[in-house]
Length: 276
Length: 298
Image 1 (tube, rainbow over the protein chains, first blue to last red):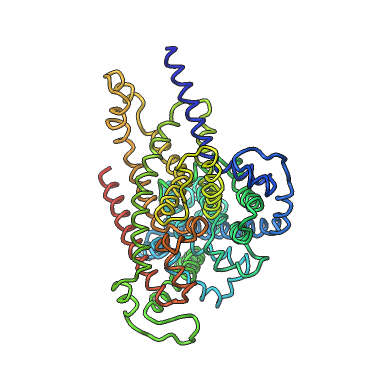
Image 2: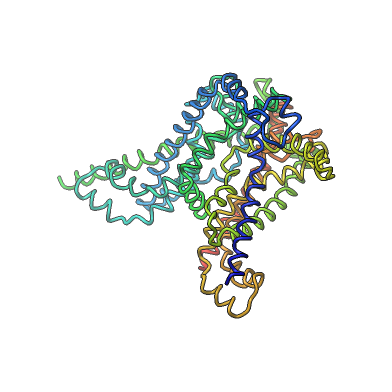
């Protein structure tokens, strides 16, 4: 019995050390973001000789961080809201009215999951310019609707079958319109799958690189966090201390989001993977 | 009178139906179908972004690619090697981590979070983090420990740069697969494992005899997810190696980007992009049919 507890403790210690080695790169980046250039060059692995905040102040101002943060929020919010709204609406009617037409529309909506982004990127850039969705964050947010709807329609439709038809039928008999039934009765019942879709889409849109690069990179006031981090590190090639601070600032929102939403994220990722 | 109401109701239903499905159809059409059809057309032209009227050249682009495009071929080989390594290693580590963390540990929740943490970071940032580690960090470690491993040029030679891409991708993604496997492990009956222990089975036997068979649904999901993700490898390369040294660590997606935006061969690049589409589509359809047949079995 005693041998077993010792083994268990040893195993736990082993796993803790393994985990610390695993995230050591992140720790190292954080530590080096508080060093002076000289300190960083001479002493990469250790603690800072003197903890300084000036890298952060410099990067914050240079990048116009609050602006970037706001841009990311706008893009992610518009993108996710549209995907959730339009996909849940389509999934509702498609799974309630099971006709041949519905089946065809369903296939039409989920079909694009087969298309890799690179296949359409250059013609998309052309067409997005014509419609006027480039060079603005709201335009970028709207562009995510078309990309996110296929997967979301798929997930929502899968979930709809678990909601008994009687619920909306009885409300319909009472004379409520389809739109009212959907928003006041059905949509709240979709909470589980809605949070899955939100988690997956927020993580994807917040961190996305190539679509923002093509659509909003030309002006500095529409850039997203990932784009700014990318161009920043490219500009300050030898000033690692600034790059470190920029990288920390770029991932800080994701890390905070993760800390506060950990349960939802893990649940969402699992549900999305298993159903997808 | 009655029939009038019925017709009214039906028209109303049609309007409702339209209101609910048209936004989804519209945005998918604008973002995916129209650019896709345009891509099919432009892949048959010599479009270079400058001339206003690209010339229709039939299958010339495709023929040229199949007759041997050095950039595309090496990107294809690299992506294939990467995919095989990524799928195998991530899934092995994912299963092992999941089994290790499925035990009742005091720090279990924190440990899971730490292994999952890299997955929530943007891939571009992850690439830069590791560029710093592989350049500055390893340099210091090499000087401090005098171990040859740290003194190698991890981003400077094509072979090692490729290995670095694989390692960094696995580091970023393994937590995601761990989480799916952890969920899958809940389906493994604990009493079956206990029975096996009483029968004298050791850990390895228990794993292959009980755990792995019960875990197979998760394995299928994870293998296919990692497969489709691996084929689209792009972001990490952008920040970690920028396809270097000398453009030798380009993936298919990177090669398409390079062809279109650096060489301005829009038409030719689009043809490459359509070949990528065929590869991904075939793999996805195989995957879906596979899942379907599994569902019938169960």
